[in-house]
Amino acid sequence: MIKEEYTFSHIESYLLENIDLLITGFPKTEERSYYFSNLWSSKNKNILFVKLEKDNCVTCLLVKDGLECKTTCELCVGLPKILKQIGIPDSNVLLDISSLDNVLIMFLTKQLLTKVTPNSFFASYIRPLQYLSESENVGYELCQQIGAVNAVPGFAKRESENQTLCAFLGFDGVRLKGIMETVQVFEKIIPIVAFPSGSPQWYNVTMLNSMDVLQSEGKNLSVYKCYSESVFEAVNLLNKIITQDETVVLAPLGTRPHSMACAIFASQHESTRILYDFVIENDNRAIGISDITIYHLSSFIKS
Image (cartoon, rainbow, N blue to C red; front, side):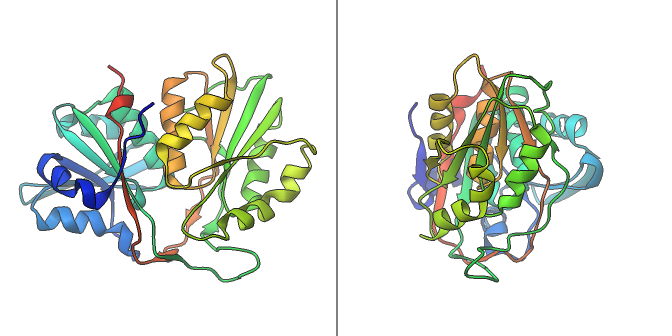
């Protein structure tokens, strides 16, 4: 697998010249949530804003040729229809995962790779300068509410007796506990920690907050690490540690690039299920803009 990941400054001119449509979230208070939409607007380029609402509905705002068209539809049926109607199959697409909900990242990734496939597919991720924290000892207050654990739309599969739980860990250990209580029946658990990252203490905080849950699974548990901003590295790791005949439950509790990697892997392996706890993130999680990574994902598009 060729790791097609680039620094935005090295590929900016190419993207501005060749990308037909930016898919992004609606702007929030964080600078990284509107960086790409502001840039695309300044160049009068086409943008599709998408927001996940309650009851699996989405609000879409298409800005094209200076005109705006806003609509609300159902996620699993309505959004794919909109993607077809606006010409995704004839387009080069950039998906800004920094601004999108994790569920939308996974759902849109599968759609663009297997259902409504574009000519070429890129994604962008912005690491902020700093995450805001309320407690230096406990970690980061990134979520205000954790929801019920359920399958991500488009990635629901039957429960299996012989299954592996593979969890990309985040800061909140209670989230892993919720996933494990929901799955209940699994032969083994594979924890993956995002490392390294912009903040050197991330690895330690993640392990500390999940340690009680992990220790309950046995002393010989193997913990894997993966670069927090790399989609390709995460996909490659999953391909390495999971066998072809293994029934897998993925739990993306960490970074957005790892959520995208889970969607890519599950799109290639039909027996893979993705569970998520549908957290409500804090509006003010981070400040500033640090590194911007671009992923060229066209090689994953199903022909």
